[in-house]
Image 1 (cartoon, rainbow, N blue to C red):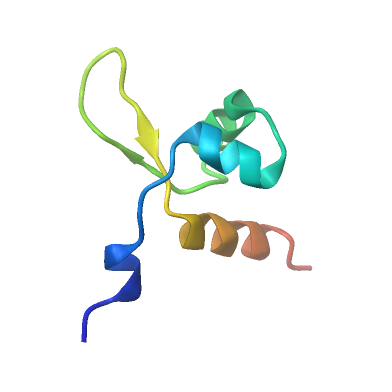
Image 2 (image 1 turned 90 degrees about the horizontal axis):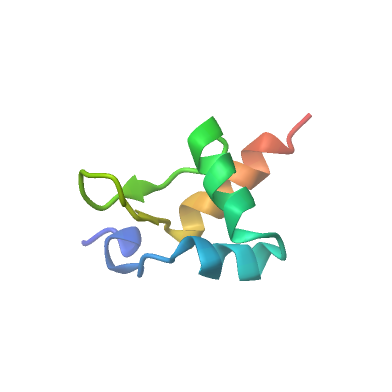
Length: 66
């Protein structure tokens, strides 16, 4: 049986920011700090990052546990 996350669409930093109600630059900073998981799409100076919402949610839940 295929993993459901395998078919989950990737989100941009802006889309994640809209869902979390924060700035896209904050999403990217959290990615750089290792708070949010994401993937760089390619090598080079302008390397966009994409996120899976289920992974973002899991990271936020884990971050807020006592």
